[in-house]
Amino acid sequence: MKILPKAIEDLVEGISNLPGIGPKSASRIAFFLLRAPKELSDNLSLTIKQARSDVKVCKECYHYCDDELCLVCNQDGRNKAVIMLVEDSLDLMAIEKAGGFDGVYFVLGGILSPMNGVGPEEIRIKELIDKLNQAEFEKIELIIGLNPNMEGESTALYIQKEIENNQALASRVQITKLARGLSSGADIDYLDEYTIKKAFEGRSAL
Image 1 (cartoon, helix red, strand yellow):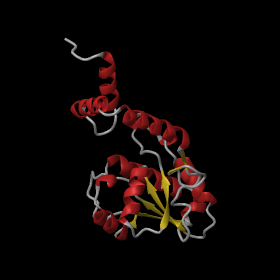
Image 2: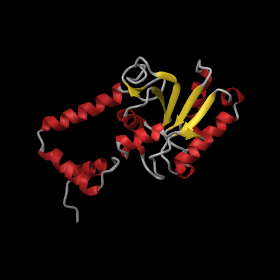
Image 3: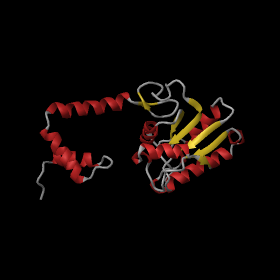
Image 4: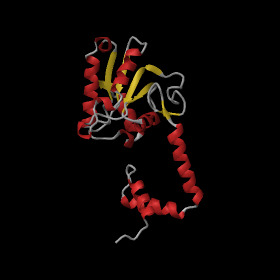
């Protein structure tokens, strides 16, 4: 027997679609929003709409921004010959917060997952190769900062082969990966700053 209006059921279902939120948490959030002053939900709705309309991706690294370049790419003193490859902006933020990295980033936008229908065309592998080809440096270091799980390792291997099969790139690009401190199956955005920093310092060649 249904005991809630459809509007509330729809709200709970919508909130439960957010990552990391189960049915109980979704219900708590929904009832909080219903009890809270109307201005709170109106402001939340407005900020979501504004973010959806105003936020774009950086033309250099594909991190989120509100201009052509993100705040990281706009910083002076960044070593653009060292590129950290990450899956998404959450990983970029975690590594940046840890400190110790003065290069730039490239947000891949996902990882290869054939079971979920994610192939090379669904993420930014072509854009990464284009960026490496267009880079005006004799030597480039590409640091693989993907999660150390099966999908992340498969994606790293695919990218490594793409670079090795391109003679011009193979002679210019050194591929390294985060090592010490990252355990198999870990998610970068859940790691503490010290672990990330040690993983960056202990990166090794693929």
